[in-house]
Image 1 (tube, rainbow, N blue to C red):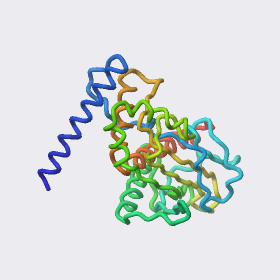
Image 2: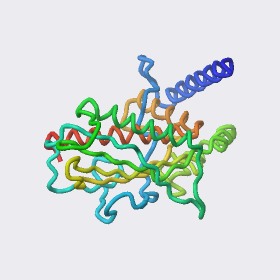
Image 3: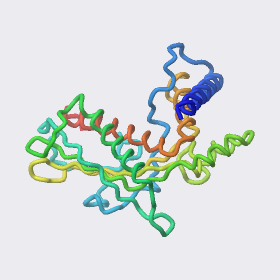
Image 4: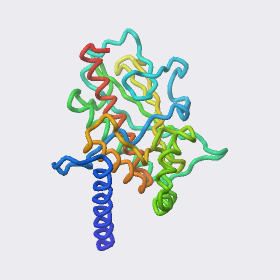
Length: 271
């Protein structure tokens, strides 16, 4: 078992090296710091055609696209004074998955536990630098409630098959737009949906609600970044396509970062 892990790790390093070199060649050079494969948020993209309506939120009709959320829909109480809140309670994450193709989705309970634990940890990690993490609701506490409403793992076998076909990436790279998905996506990429609610910890009053569904992007390039940053995004997206749940974790990281940034601006009086 240990030997298999070592072989797998060595193979992954070779893949990373090859992808990074290819990305650098395509994008005319890389930075020399060697930190090309850090976490990125552009390897997943919002898909408004797949937003969920699970019943977790109070009023879906008032949700609107946001200027800051890259496709996330939200509503906020106009009277909210976020500066009154100095702590946040990240509640246990619920799972409310929609049926697919006329039947219920089934998952390994261990996978669901791992994913919800990861998302909870990502939210706490992103919020902790600016707010106290509360253990229980109360005055001055925001209660953050989250439900995972859509989970589709990447079909790794299909991703591998596409990779092995010469020049298949040319057709795959454009298949997202052709099929109504985000650019750089393919039909076998994973998708992850969430609905999120913010409540006053003392009164239970709803302060805001959001929803989003993120689709994995196997061929993701950040055209606004440097050559090194674009290579990093491209490599991250490509590597994520060979693991079932990596795009879900990418989505959790993206949402956690956006929530933390948005709350920071609201508390600073920058709506």
